[in-house]
Length: 236
Image (cartoon, rainbow, N blue to C red):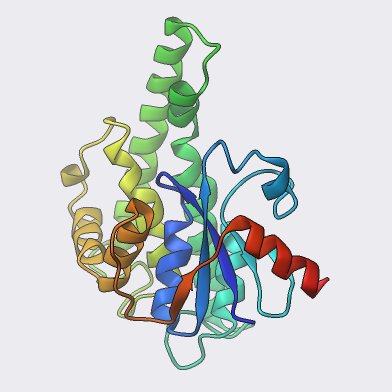
C-alpha cells in the first residue's frame, strides 16, 4: 500500500509534507481535510485524535502525526537524494535542529495571529494584543532565520533538504498576516522565491487550490476520508 498523506486546507503546514513527498519521487496518495470542519469531525479524529493535519498512513499501516515525525519518516527513505541524512551523522543532527527551530519558533510565532483570526469569543482589545504579540514573534523569528540562512542557497547549505520543504509551508502565512515585509529579510526572500518556482511547490499549491496539478513525483491520486478509513481498518 502506498502511503496516504492527510493534508489540511486552507493553507495547512502540511503543504511542506506534500512537497517532501514530491521531491522523494516514490508513490503516495493524498486525502483532503477541510479545516476546521472535517478536521474536527469524529471520523477524522479516528485518524488524528487531536484533530490536526498533517497525518500520514504509512505503507506499513502505521498512523503517524506531527510534521516533524512525518518528515523524519519520509527522510528514512531518501537515501541518495540528499533530502535527509542517516541517523547518527552530523547532517542528521543539523537537519533536526533546523526542523525543530521551524516548528517551535517559526511556526509557533504565527499562533497568536491565527488565534486572533479564528477565535470568535474574544473582543477587539484582545485581538489587538494578540496581533501585536504575534507581530513581535514573527519579526524575531524571521530575523533569526535570516541570520541562520545567510548566503547559503538552502537552509542547510548547498543542497535542498526536508527543512526547505517545511519552511515553504509556513513562510507563505505572511499572506494572511500582514505583520512583516519579507523583503526586509533578503536571504529569506531569495529562498522563498526559489521555492515558489519549484515544480513540487507549484504542484502542492494547485492541489490545495483544487486546480489541475501535474506531479513530477510519485503522486497516485486522491482518496476520500471514507476510503482512507476503510484502508486503515484493513491494515489494523
